[in-house]
Amino acid sequence: MRALLLGLLFGLLASSAAAQPAQRWMTLPPTPTLPTPEKSGHAPVNGISIWYATFGSGPPVILLHGGLANSNYWGNQVPTLAKTHRVIVMDSRGHGRSTRDSQPYGYTLMASDVIGLMDYLAIPQAAIVGWSDGAIIGLSLAMSHPGRVSRLFAFAANSDPSGVKDVDKSPVFTEFIARGEKEYEALSSTPREYKKFVEEISTMWATQPHWTAADLGRIKVHTWIVDADHDEAIHRENTEFMARSIPDAGLLLQPEVSHFSMLQAPRQFTEDVLLFLERKWE
Image 1 (cartoon, rainbow, N blue to C red):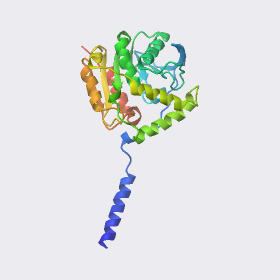
Image 2 (tube, rainbow, N blue to C red):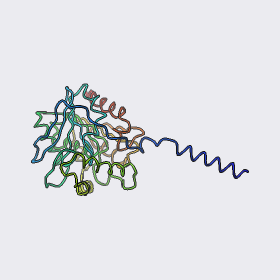
Image 3 (cartoon, rainbow, N blue to C red):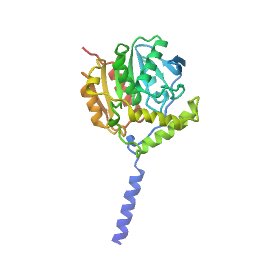
Image 4 (spheres, rainbow, N blue to C red):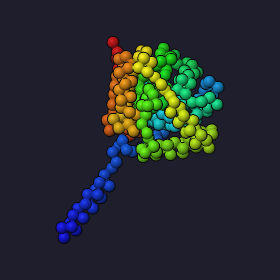
């Protein structure tokens, strides 16, 4: 009888644990959709076609998505940000609706694409909000084109390939890569080249960037280095290294989220961005 009761108890506990919802950092909520833009299209930049969309009016802020993703991932942030800012989203070269050429992917090249779009839209300076690869592009912009960046919110960046964790065993990242294939097929002008696309982006991830403390120390743009407390892709030590190395940089860790914070806790992420955009410096 005692063994039977224990078996029933363990069964109930296991059933209860299975019924518990996954912690939000272990989920990948659906990719949102962007609201109807005021303007959108393809800009001729660096010999390729960059897709972009703009929303709202006010001080400009450019949202740069992560690798393998596209601008739709900002769909939860744009409506709120567009109430007080002119929001610009763009698909990075070879991502989403943008095209690419034969040049290898590189953060310096992709940063120059952002400058090219800003020139096309006659935007002399903008705040940059970047996620993952977009944050690295933002850091590159802050180094190479500081006059064009009013402030930088860099979420889930790394300064060196050694700052990246092995994500092969992460179920959330595995799901993201699989989702990326479907989105690539739906949006890209080369829908059957996802495998090649991932291989070429992976080469960039394995070899770039390589920024030292001295490199980061030359950044004079107002910067917040931001990450998630459960980021499955970025080593915390690298995040803290960047925040220490950039003069007067802020360090923010968002709670109970992962590399996909803008999907998992969209209100929290958006409020942090707004706090940063409205921050007054002496």
